[in-house]
Amino acid sequence: MNQKRVDLPSVVTDNESAVAQALAEKNYVQAFLLVHALIESLLRAFLGHEHKEDRFYDLIEAYKNYLSKNNYPFPTFVTELTEFNRRRNRITHKLWAKGYSETNRQTEAAAHTATLMYGLFIEWLQTFEPEIVERGFRLSEDG
Image (cartoon, rainbow, N blue to C red):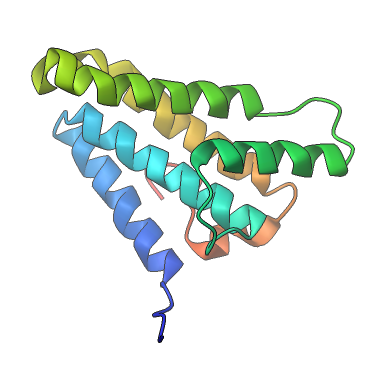
């Protein structure tokens, strides 16, 4: 079987642009879910799990283990990533329970916060792997 190699920087740039567009169009559910996918991709790239079928939770655990193995006494971003994933689950459940319009209205702050967390997480991961931005991940919404 011939597996096509993904051009990660191109995919990341496209998804980051889609986040900016979704925010501009006040499509907060879409923006939040896209940031969730970007953070998942970031974790996969950082941990070298690009071709594994890990769930987001598994990636958080692998990241936590990485910090532990590197003697970091405080698991930086683990709680935030766990809560971020829980919020994603709540948002998807609200879509069918309350509908798109109400869920989208309630997701505005979460979408903006998610974009900030994404940038901060990239910056934090650069302390371990400075070239992570060469894989396409940016530090801010404006590039």
